[in-house]
Amino acid sequence: MQRRDFFQKAMAAAGAAVATTAVSRSALAALPEPVIQTSPDTAAPWTPPGVTGAGRPYNPVVTLNGWTLPFRMKNGVKEFHLVAEPVVREMAPGFSVNMWGYNGQSPGPTIEVVEGDKVRIFVTNKLPEHTTIHWHGQRLPNGMDGVGGLNQKQIPVGKTFVYEFEARRPGTFMYHPHADEMTQMANGALA
Image (cartoon, rainbow, N blue to C red; front, side):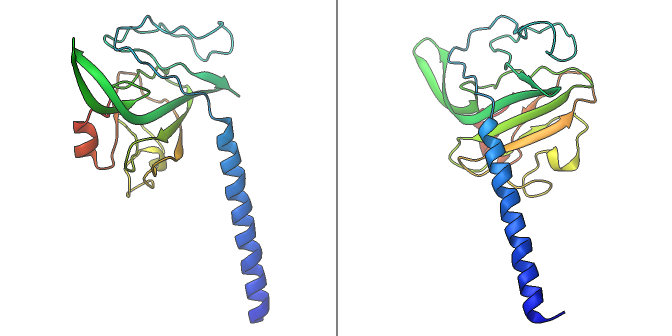
């Protein structure tokens, strides 16, 4: 192979890679609208709109001092949008605490899925540093386990990462960051 041919092929491959990146970025324009909760009061169970097309049947739970994150169905996949961000939580009347959390609350909202559901969770980072989400107890593809620097890149400030997996284990599990976790979890970033 001639040197010139090599560089022409390399440039064509780089152009294809850039085009692929552009497609994935434009796909992010289809993010579900994030739902933000401003009250720490216990919310009523969230019932998916309509019975058909809302995934597998389940009995919604009541999360004490919390709420359930709404989802949308898209091509048979439950899509959620988590926003990691600084929040202010009133711990007692007149006593507010600056914390880190998800969608306006700490702890973050309950994400309800049923074993066998296909799940897509868009995580947007509005914290002042990089973050990830580790899904405790779920059996996941390695790149979706949320351990920053080990099996996924950290989510930079202002960016969104998409976690996709099938819920394979029934139970109640927590989620939390695995990026500077001692600081982020101590500030309340967990659910």
